[in-house]
Amino acid sequence: MVRRKKKPVQEVPIDKVEDFMFQNYKKIVMVVGACLLVFIAAYTVRQIMAVSAEKAEAEIGSAETKMAVNGANAESLSSYKALAGRKSSSKNYIYLKAGIIEANNNMPDAQATLAAVDGSLAELADSLAYDLGSKDIDPKTYIAKGSMKPLWYYRAVLSAEGDEKAKLLEEFGSKYPESPLYEMVKRWES
Image (tube, rainbow, N blue to C red; front, top):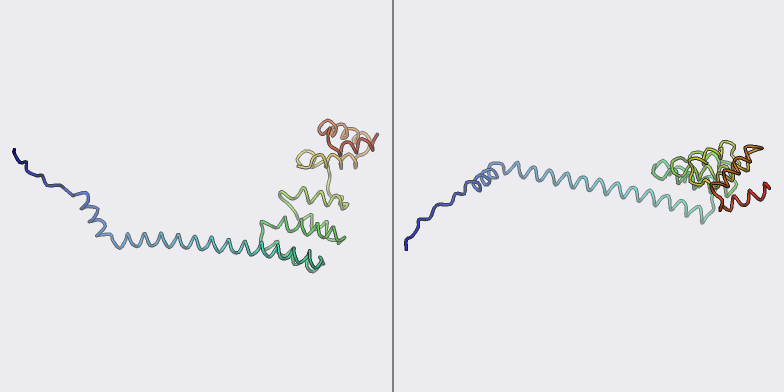
């Protein structure tokens, strides 16, 4: 048997990597450290924001509980409305809730508070303001775009006069024939 000579294994690629790491050791450590610091800073900021959001929500809940237990007065409602400035994502909810409390306690500011509500709760606030006698709300505007269309048809029929009332009643019946509101208004108008 003939012995073959072993060929030397070239470790050039590994040597290049080791050489690169040896020459740039400080840079690599600084980049990894900087990435770690950025991650820790972002995580800390996110946690601080989450804690402040939870604190604002806890303040809103605490104010609602105090008003429920001690009764709502003008001072407690004004401090409750001031919370809307602290947490803008809850602003519409706070104004709607304050408007409902003012309406239930027959306070004069209910319609003004409900007028401050916008966004997804605006239709509900306008509905309550309409029930409180606001003349600024036209039920016909919500017939086409609202989510409580049968209720707005009902209100539009009741507020309309003459031929317009008959037209709205017919339209209401064709779109919502099973609605109890349609049955009531049809009975009243016949």
